[in-house]
Amino acid sequence: MNEYLSNLFSLEGKTAVVIGGTGELCGAMAEGLAGAGAEVVLVGRNPDKANARLQKLHRFHGKSYFEACDVASRDSLEELVEKVVNKSGKIDIVVNGAGVNSPTPFLEITEEELENILNVNFKAVFSASQVFGRYLIERGQGGSMINVGSMSGVIPLSRVFTYSATKAAVHNLSKNLAREWATQKIRVNTLVPGFFPAEQNRKVLTEERVAQIMGHTPMKRFGESSELIGATLLLASDAGSFITGTEMIVDGGYACMTI
Image (cartoon, rainbow, N blue to C red; front, side):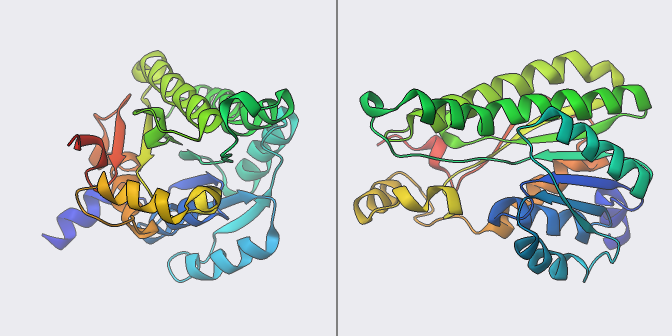
């Protein structure tokens, strides 16, 4: 049984690029990918945070490494693909996990703030999908793209208007790409975390807000970052070979709760 499961979820010989891998949630996803045998490329801006995460990854795969990249720049993304292919030989899995949040009331959102969140949460994912998607298509051996969405992209959530709108756009983009690339064996899915106390949402987690979230979450707790690993491996590996265009929700039951 163990050998059967190991083969089913194995990522041995695969290279995974994890954009946002220096953060809390995508960092845990990166650890899971490395634990399944993938060579993981952490992509971000902070080498110190990357080094701390790499120490954990190297317990599983000593070849994992960090690449700095401005994901808002198409030129930087194209350079990233070139660097990874030159160093690792290929790319099989892409995780698009860059994201920023804001609790600004709707009528007070400035054009500058809207532009910034659009650039990070949606435009960067759009551009990365184009750049990495073109590589995967030209390579002709398929691949898996996992875009990190949000529960607020599925169910309206108060106080995070710009974040919700951009994540909903990521969900829609992922479905369209899944349809477009399915015959080329490129699977595109959205991993949808429920409430995890990640860096970008800590600023909106007041005591009242936490009580509201717990009242709407059947499991009555936040998720742990490691609890995203199972869904990540399913979407990245051959175990999920017929899964594309889905929103894989990991939320402790939040989406099924009414009254």
